[in-house]
Image (cartoon, rainbow, N blue to C red):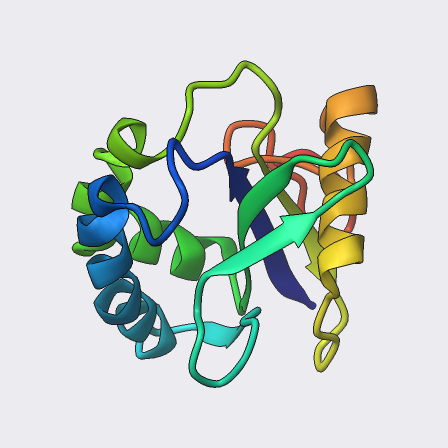
Length: 150
């Protein structure tokens, strides 16, 4: 089993706006850092040349999504919190609107399975509606592949 993760955010401005320029410039190097990280399996992209993915969901809001698959929880944790990614994450309020809604989810996928955006958004909705469980959880409320809480 591999660990899938999805996080979403509402941008404070369109990606081509001047206030988003630094964020856009950081996308390629931070995504390359993920691609080269130990345990990285796959990352959802709009195309081979565009790593920012806007996703239109049922409520009509445009969201920027990030979805990836990792071999283990520790591999994902190390990338998120022990690389240059952390400095970018700490600046998220510059580029993303504050929100109280659930914005991040994890779930286990079989080896070789690459989740769709719809699958990720469904897991996010499950977490928001039912709280953490074996099919949708967070680092804080993590569940092992067996379904047991960590």
